[in-house]
Length: 86
Image (cartoon, rainbow, N blue to C red; front, side):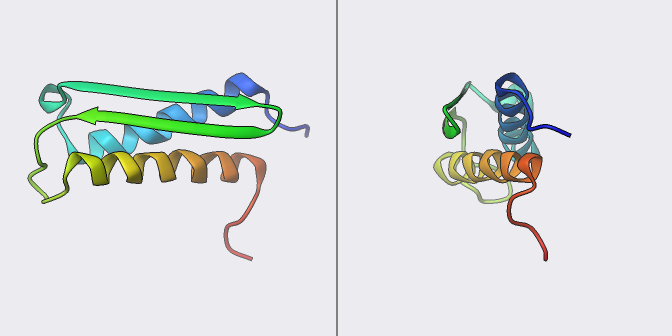
């Protein structure tokens, strides 16, 4: 099986990031969410902007945005079979 195409990489990363955000917040509580993912020449860039109130679980938006970006990168690593348990 070949490597995933750029569109699959971007979609996988964006879905992972959004999944983390909406695990912490109800969609109606999120004032603004911008997940920007680029994948060019094998380089992944993920930027997550989140405007939402502090979550009921105590997480603040900046922490959740950082967690979402990490989850996006991890999801792409999984897609390529990088890292994980040996």
